[in-house]
Length: 263
Image (cartoon, rainbow, N blue to C red):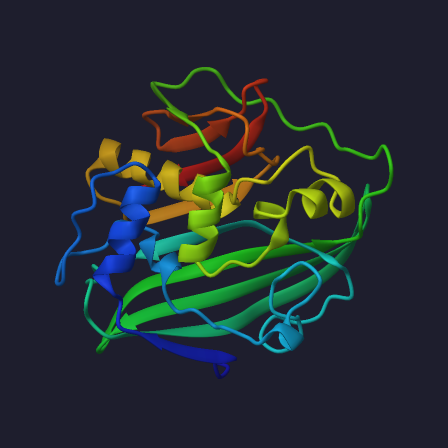
């Protein structure tokens, strides 16, 4: 096995988890020693960099941890997780990060760069979470070039509405120390990146989908997801669940914004 490209430690402050519960409209109740809900580890293991080490989009510059693919636009396209043991609030933890693979391809919209990062979250000698994060890099959008999003299924067993606004996106960005400007800088999101508004974080959609899956299954051992279309901050979505373990996010016009599987 190759050496990790980064090792970070964190005390897993329960106050941050309670702030996340409040952000998504849940009663804040996590205390020291409680197991975190699935995917709440995204709130921890910050890697703060000074302004000179940030790219134009507000993210840390590539080349230090994530390889430089030579393309300006970054998107967390999806990932998969294995939940092996509870991650406990208030207990020291570490995260080891590895570069799993890189690839460059030519897509319909131009060149694409793909990076898969693997993260392992440990408490003591126990590996609690194994996670693979898929990142896509692409060129700046060309005027008038906008791919047709896939259509979401309509045969769900459960559908829950999810509403977003600028405050929620700001709070989630702050809790995850995510400086990507598409989530809070409207002129940048619409002018430079070509979106219709502020973009709801893909991991936030995945978080809501995971929590719905957990309520249906009782516990989660695995989850995989893929972002398929952006959702804007002013749009109401539906988080959908089907009893075969599939979950998806449907936009107000019926487009599929995210799809996943849970077990």
